Each structure stands twice: as structure tokens, then as C-alpha cells.
Image (cartoon, rainbow, N blue to C red):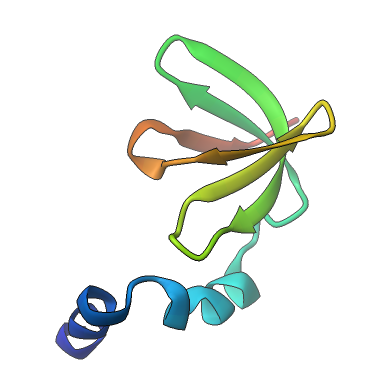
Length: 75
């Protein structure tokens, strides 16, 4: 873990993105996003090279930061 953290600090999320994508169980699945008092349904589109969550709603892509987002599979 320490080696991975050192690499993350030095190189950012990019070296881990491919492994993340292979394990992403929400990719292209409907999700409900909760941000404070606002909630909406979207399609999860993975993460970008910074680790931000990408979702699509109403034909529009959004980039969300996980510190303020709670995800659950949508019905």
C-alpha cells in the first residue's frame, strides 16, 4: 500500500485508471447521485484521469468529485 500511495503522490491517478476501469461495477449502469440536498439519476461513465466520477444525464456529461457524492445503484 505504501508503494502505491507513493506512486499516487508522484504520478496521480493515471497509472491506476486502467485497473480501476476493469473493476468498476457501476460502469454504464444507472445510478442515483446524492449531492447535499440535490439528487438525480444518471448513467455512470467511469472516472477520468484525475479520479473524478463521470456521469451522463439528459445527454450531458458531468464530472463529479467523490468528496461530495454518494452513489447507489438506481432502481
